Image (cartoon, rainbow, N blue to C red; front, side):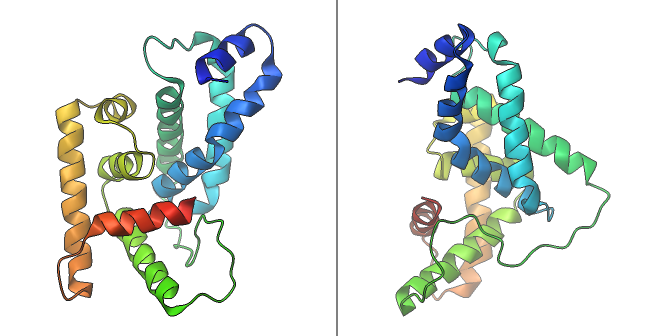
Length: 201
């Protein structure tokens, strides 16, 4: 069932169908809020922020208008605003980063050397992303991991499409500059993004 049909049913009183929407987007929203919060040492709050996002969306669902934005775009906007609110609350608090805190379905069994190298590269990309300014980080996550188009990202971030393209250009350049010292040649960050997407899945 499409999002729009589910939403019509929920608005008509079949509120139990909201759990279907939650399952559809729960992992993506959790990953998005995690990346938004991790650089401030607040990755452990991602589940709470994700839950609050779905709660806010449910409470406001009657006011949602699909002609203005898709449900996913609307939901990501709520997620970003909720994460930013959490960051503002903790801005004055210096919380240490938690090493090894990753969202992944992969098991902990021993991996071959190639997989270990890939994991190391993925970890470096994660760290580089965490160093990006908030809007660059959000734009990159939405584009590379959630495969959103420029218009969707622009709506979520409240930016023009040209601004989104500029944010992505600067984000990718920053990632490249951060990672190149660790390699003997140019860093092909797209390959590493693919590695991260496969790890997230």
